[in-house]
Length: 377
Image (cartoon, rainbow, N blue to C red; front, side, top):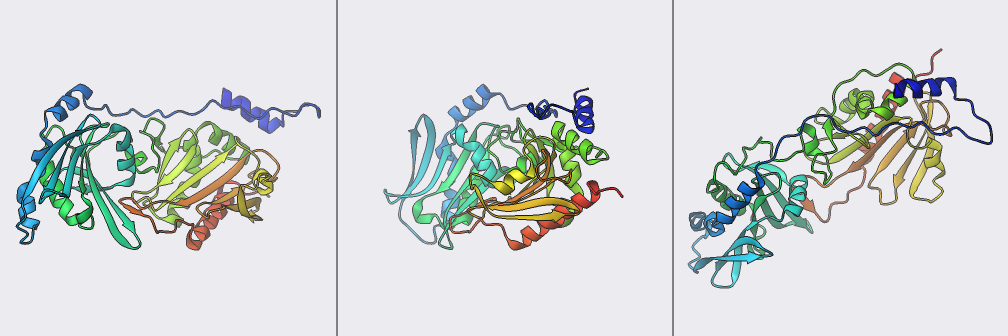
């Protein structure tokens, strides 16, 4: 009924006096509807970690295979830091080689978002490499044991350029963890379901659903009203065009803020929308606060639109008026931004939108406007 009332308002133009401009349409905020998996028992996981000898997770046989004739003695030194257990493999009394530690739950979501999923002998892990000046500068592997808890293996500074070494230690250490604590490589280790696991966001999954296929209604007014009420409609408007231009790895997700197309490697994130909410496209063209740069007015299909960039060139945005007037509320939008590649924290990589991706974004908007918003006649 709400959507029907809004459509009636849009189609009848909702006459109001000049002195009292019409109120913008109001839509209840969409919320995810798909069920979420349950986490493991928090107390049981906490007790298992408390009973764990973290020094046993640092396998000395793995060190022997890798020491390359170095005869200096090594010791495993346990420690409690900030209330969390850890152990360090130390060589010759002063050189830290490997750390094994209980991860702060507040940091785990970042390791999931930034880390590349790896297989540690049948156990799920997340690997993160740090690069500076074109060289490997650090390596860490996180092994989740619940949605909130994890064990982390990390190289000391003197060995920080040898991720294969760490992989050996992490594989051996993961094999010593209780089987009911670890996850298989494709296991559900968070509340981020389906493609939501590939969203570049620190969300724990409560505000994201994998998009479901819905029918796109006919007519510009009906589409943007439906899109304002349900981001699954926005995803449906863009689904074919995004996959044709950017590739089949991009999967749509629905969030209260709109539709995103995400991919497992995190190289690029695409935001898409077709909504009666938000401002008119002309507001971005005017940009009174000079938030963006390189504003251009152009057409997509036969509808007027605008493009602009963020000042750091990290984002490129395209907005079009589905109703044919840049000053009328309601828009179709596409925003693209390159992201840090999963598993690689490259301090030198320039994260700017490429001209190839800009051309693809233009092609997507042209296709969407021509397919769903063409002027009849």
